[in-house]
Image (cartoon, rainbow, N blue to C red; front, top):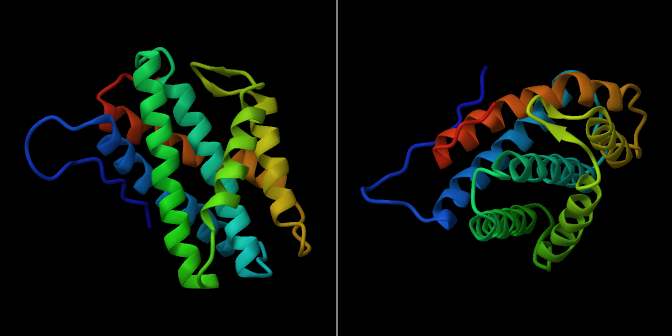
Length: 186
């Protein structure tokens, strides 16, 4: 079953960048969850809730960086910063809420933000063109996913993520960002 991306707003009038970031963040969360479910259906094993959280965090970090690359040059630098910061904050709130359900009370937001910031700095070193992320960009994502899943025996994680999950997620993300921001996405 295909993932339904919701890009329509309720109510009339112009929407702020923060509101648009909320819609993108909501859908990035859905894409990350779908990635986890698809990997489970392909018989990749997840040993614990912490491992699931690590996988979802890696998918989110990848998708936030791809989003930043998509909007680069399409939004002014101040608008881009506002949008990406709002996106990160919204996703951190979602992570906090979800982790409280699974793990109980505590600060689940700070570790997520720390990982997100570290990954964004790392991904910034990799090439992204009109065709999408370069090989090193995808390989880094695959490596991080393999590390997140290393607790259990999961062969082929890196290759599977690079060849199947990343292209699928990027396709959904490009449609999402283009429609929500009203920008042309290659």
